[in-house]
Amino acid sequence: MAVSSPCCRHCQSPLEQEVIDLGHQPPSNAYLTAEQLSLPEITYPLKVYVCTACWLVQLPAHAAADQLFTADYAYFSSTSSSWCDHARRYVGAACERLGLGADSFVVELASNDGYLLQYVRERGIPCLGIEPTAATAAVARTKGIDTIERFFGVALAEELVDGRQAADLIVANNVLAHVPDINDFLAGMAILLKPAGQVSIEFPHLLELLQGNQFDTIYHEHYSYISLAVLQRMAGHAGLKLVDVERLPTHGGSLRVWLARCDAGLESDAAAQDRLAAILGAESAAGLTSLQAYAGFQQRAEAAKHGLLRFLLNARERGAWVMGYGAAAKGNTLLNYAGVSRDLLPVVADKAASKIGRFLPASHIPVISPEEWLSLQPQEVLVLPWNLAEEVKSAFRDQPAMTFYRAIPGLERI
Ligand SMILES: [Zn+2]
Image 1 (cartoon, rainbow, N blue to C red):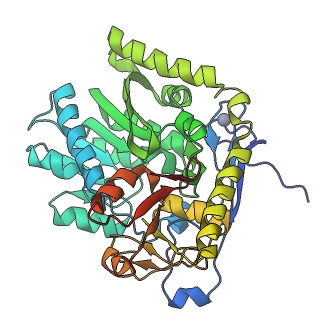
Image 2 (image 1 turned 180 degrees about the vertical axis):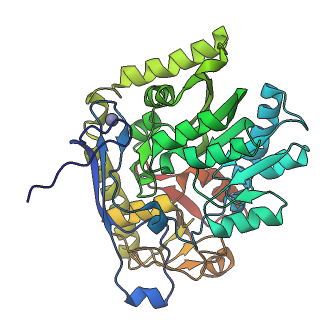
């Protein structure tokens, strides 16, 4: 029986153009307990396509969202201090930009543990979090943040508007890529927004992913890999238009895009138009809306994999151990693509209580606390969340014997 091609999440055209194949992998947040190590693990193909009709780069649907975002999903945004600082600065800038005050209403989609809305609340601005993951929503409520535990889309947006909870600002940071039905999500924003309101969306920029060889940011929970040009197309389809863009250093290079309702009549000023044109121009020059940008990506990922393996094997030949720091999702993509397990990387340290005592999916490398890890006297440290490399390095500045490395874009000392 012929297997039909999967279809594009945005325009439903058949997906036929492969961008990169990272093999079969389990969901990257499926941290295992000791008991689960003796059970089978489900893996899915981790193969990215680009739609040659609308140029959305994406994973085809394999697993339902509720299978991947399990109740014990372990990522709590507040465990990263640099991420909380980023959120605090963002709230200050957004309040100033939109003149938000006690009579405004802010809704955050994927509000996690309240890492961002806590700063909105501090300013006395009413707000609401929407977060489908029970464990993180519960933590947000302990901070006094009203949180609805559901997935967002048109249905929930209509309920909120009926309940007079339309928003002056909708924040959607690092969630758009995780949404299976991206059209429904964007259409829901257009419904929830007050006529003069604005949406701000942050997402890792596809251009940086390709140019920085950040193939490890590809994982099953991350369905779409977004450029400004494709966001402009998808937002327009939903009744939203781009009004401004900023470049951010987060996640190896992100964009923060401001959008308004098409029917609001809001025009960007000349400076914002220049910023939008500059990024759209850079994407076009890099060939993101042709096949040019995607050629050679697989080979560059293989080169990084081989560099990592040589580094780990050389250490073992010298009788040394490299130890990992940061049990991040991107680390799981890298380690499983490279086939690294505990014979080459015996432990990974992480601050998150929800990960300590568990094992990384597929590689089965144990996650230990930073205190236990320090007692092993690590000397050569592989920082898996390379976007937090400086934070990790400065946290251990009183350990002069340690040297730090990252594997992306290629193996290098930091
Ligand atoms: Zn498409």
